[in-house]
Length: 309
Image (cartoon, rainbow, N blue to C red; front, side):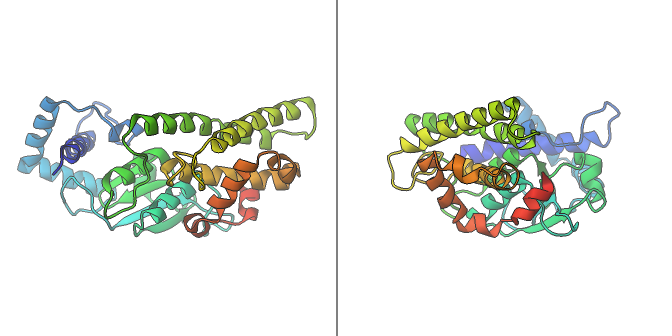
């Protein structure tokens, strides 16, 4: 086992200790998994203590009880996850059974498809969510259940999949280790983070065409121009947003949000072509990502997007 795997193994052992204790102590420890649970800065002392706790027969019983209480599988296995047994719970569409319009769920589906990871998809309404998801994870979706584990929040799920399912068996969705690549990815991430808030504010505003609407459109266009400039400065013929050369988690996150933007502008604002025509590099990127197999396989119809907004 590599040093990196060993560190994350200890993190997941620590997580399970906390999970078990949440069911047996009155101190109010949350049994929900937060974003930080995957990235705890665990010291060597706490790792040793956690390992010692988990090797005792009593702790094994506690973990089994915790798994049963959470509605998860009873099978006990090593700290390093393996492929199989993945179910993604996500927002259902208007009929209550088809896949809904959540861009964050499509992000995770694209990651799973890009990595060729077998998984089931379980569209859920508030009435059809499993009880363990409501009781222990506040019903949050998307939620990835992987055997005895469950994670919510799309970025946490994506990082979990990327960390444990790596090359050479699974395609990488991260940039290289050079400082230049990391810096470029950080810049791209900061630009991309501005998109969806600007889209949501603009699409939700009514009435169309008033001063506030024009101000929100200008704000969105500023973001789109920044994205277009970033893509124009890429040095490759197939400019992915994260590093130019290969698809990354950032591209999987961006594509569904751009889909919501294009559909919303088409149906609500009637200005999709007028606006996007100003940004040729971004338009090329959108066409490339929308043609990608993982995007097409995870796609839901425009009418679902309109229904969701």
